[in-house]
Amino acid sequence: MAPIPGSGLAKGLAVTLRTMTKKTVTEQYPDAQPDLPPRTRGVIGLFEENCTVCMLCARECPDWCIYIDSHKETVPAATPGGRERSRNVLDRFAIDFSLCMYCGICIEVCPFDALFWSPEFEYAETDIRDLTHERDKLREWMWTVPAPPALDPGAEEPKEIATARKTAEKLAAAQAESAPSADPQGEES
Image (cartoon, rainbow, N blue to C red; front, side):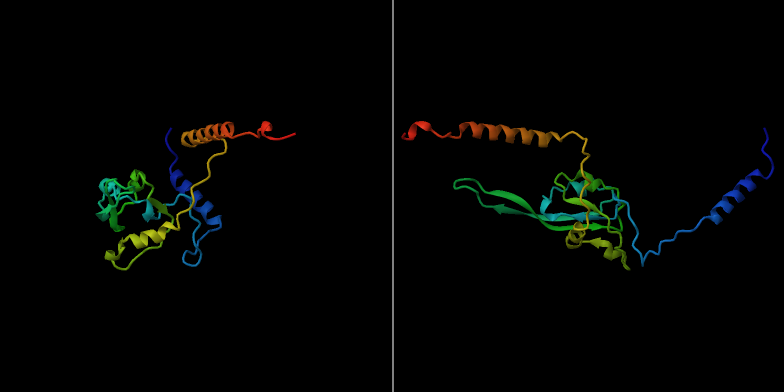
């Protein structure tokens, strides 16, 4: 069946007429902040206390936009006769947001939960060189990270929590059994 000549034009005009009759909704952005979805990817926040300088985020980044510098420090032995340990100390953690493509690989590979998505999106600069943000700025954004969503009430308990709870219950039961009960023989009548 051949299409009727001009039917495409009629469909287009119908869409235009429908759109013209609807009320427009314009958000006045600088004056009114937008309502962002809960999982918005704005900027990456750094929780420095969790960072062990394992360099996984920098190695896995496809854009090579994460710069990390560290040094080793010797920690004295915890017990007398023990050996000294060495640990990495973070000197610099920077992300160049002019290169970052916001893929989130660095956040996914971090084994110690040191990187998080923050919904903060207003970090424009007039010079591209100012888009490399150091750890102080990344730490400030950490406090804008929303709390994780609550677990589904119908979901089964995570195995780690279930194991810890069972161990605690066994320990409490063992302590209750070994607790001395009141000895009636020791009292005089």
